[in-house]
Length: 308
Image (tube, rainbow, N blue to C red):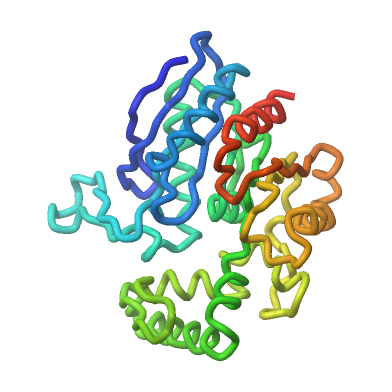
């Protein structure tokens, strides 16, 4: 296995760092790994990332794991564009500023990077909110070059915040964020009393809106009560490519009342009929949302399914 530290450009020219794992024998196959929120970036989970790199390269599949614009809480990124004045080449990024629709630009940049390296068969893997980004990408990209998707630990972020904030505070926070957006003040930091500090208004509005792009896995709504009018699992249900939905048995973010098995049953019910015969739904025993302690089992399961 060969490992290299690399950098790539999103389609809007943000410079993003990553790791490229390649098998010793040349291959045209490559998987892209999307991390979840904040400090769950690729450089903070070496056990899981290295296990995936080893398992995938062992199956003749390269892996690009990169920090997208949502890495860290608050991060300034470089815009690589000499046409811009130097003082305008900084982009305010991180989970506290990210809008999930912009992940399409990051994934497009990763695909372009891999194509330039000679790869031509692609798989997209996402953990936690990285799984949300797969659904958003599939719904909004003009053409998806991926032949398979892996949704690892897909969580209900909107439901999480509804549970944590409570009904009254949730709707108040969403209203505050939306009003800031209407006033073209999207980077304004949410006040502490809203419960959404230190998210920006644009990120808070993105995460909290039940009818927005972020709410791709509404497990809370599917099992408890409706929060919005958007059809449940709208983006997910339109995916026609083969899917692996994989959880840790003790994942703490399913919000179903019935745990992981209930969540997997819901995903199975909402899977597109074209994708269902080619899809798998798996729980890794004795582990949590991050697959801690079972990184190798998780990685080998993912690699075997992609190679099958």
